[in-house]
Length: 196
Image (tube, rainbow, N blue to C red):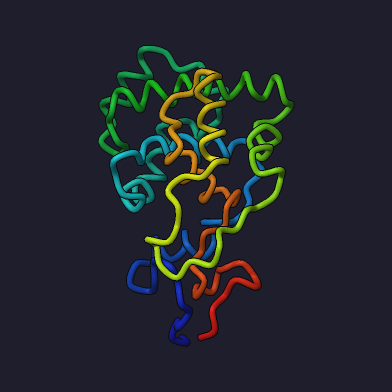
């Protein structure tokens, strides 16, 4: 098996889970409503934690939250709340669990109004993937942008929670509304890569 010598922003052969996420998901445009809902919920659960912690629990989250079908989560009642709070496979935070259920209900309202959540959420970037100026290090990347702040305000106005601008920006990075791979990374947008 050939040695993997690709240059990555994060992850690598020594951390297969993060490497797969970096190589195959982070910054790739997502337009499927179920996947968008999953990302929105998981980014809310990440608040105060590392993404690796959430990624390690993602399969457990999918099982616990009905594969992130928003219709199922929106209908969760008291028994489901107790079940989730007792589930050691996920992050057992009462506020975040309540937010996931409430956000599912708001998510369905957005779908009703716009036809799809995808149509609504991608409107914040004009339907395009935004690319930050060439960044050589993580410290050069923003933690929020005007688009993330606008998204946060509108989601908040619609009753979503755990949707501050930093969480919204992490969501935008995760679902490919922004491609923030560093300039020297093999996944950097074409024309943004630094010479080797």
